[in-house]
Image (tube, rainbow, N blue to C red; front, side, top):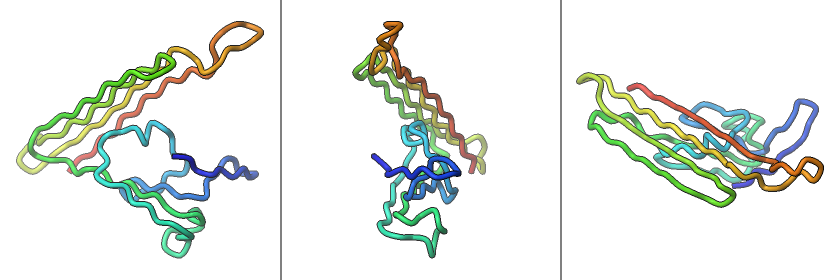
Length: 138
C-alpha cells in the first residue's frame, strides 16, 4: 500500500489519514500494518476533512482490530521472504477472569541481506529490523 507523501516544513505528512480503533496515527509504520489482529479495514475515498479533520484531505484508512475474547485462542504466522527476511507474527487472546479479557499481538521482522551494496565499503545497505507489540484489555 503506497501513500502519497507530502514534504512540508513540519516534516513528512500524508494526505490520507490513518485511524486504528478510533485513534489518529500521525506517522504509520510498516510494523503497525503487519500486526495480525485486524478485524476489518475501512477505506473512505475523497476529502474527509469535515468528519475527520484537515489531515484527511485525500481520504481515510480506518483499521478496526478484533476485540479481546474470553475463549482462549492463538494465531501464529512465520514467513521467510527474499533478501534473507524472516518475520514472525503472533496473536493471542483469552480471559483473565470471568469479566476481563486480554489480547496481545506481536510482530518481529528481520532482513539480514540489504537491498543494495555500498560501493565504497562493500557492505549491504538498507537492512531492516522491526518489532511491534500491542495489547488490549476488555
